[in-house]
Image 1 (cartoon, rainbow, N blue to C red):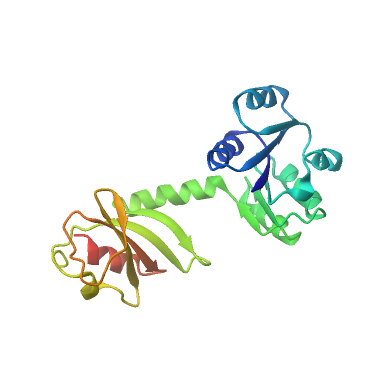
Image 2: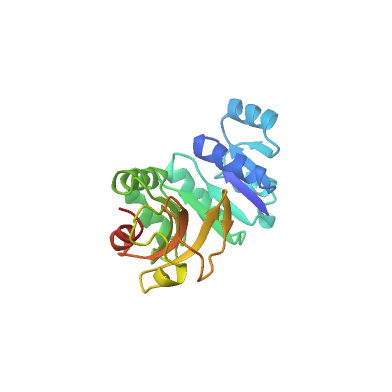
Length: 216
């Protein structure tokens, strides 16, 4: 997969490192020469120093071959303009970082629907650490209709029961358990143990009910 990332701040570089580790082809764009030189020396990626809102520079990246274009700078206006320019090259996936939530509407008005705010995301994670200290959120399903959560069994009322006795219900389904750190697909006759970690697909609005089911 070929991914072009505009912006080599913390977000852009962290994303680039993750994608490189996954074996993807990465091109980085930034107008800061010092950052470009540092990235070129340290990363297994093509680094282009220049303005990502310039059509000629975008064409130097072989933009027509890109699977993703991701604008991660801290400048919402630059991110918006670059995404508008990239649309004419028919890149199938365009993602933009937005620092000011009030600007999200402008991105969507020009057809950029994949808009991410790291600040809002971080705030949401902090809120969950406060309200769900014993639960790890793995992924949101669909349009926020459900979440996959990691929970630890501490409720004695279900310890010793079979998976089939407690799952599935209309609110959740246990989709994985872990034995010696390894994921196991649960069977209906699998026995639930105290302290066991499970992954649970939970319907939106049912977290409190499900949390009480699995935890004290």
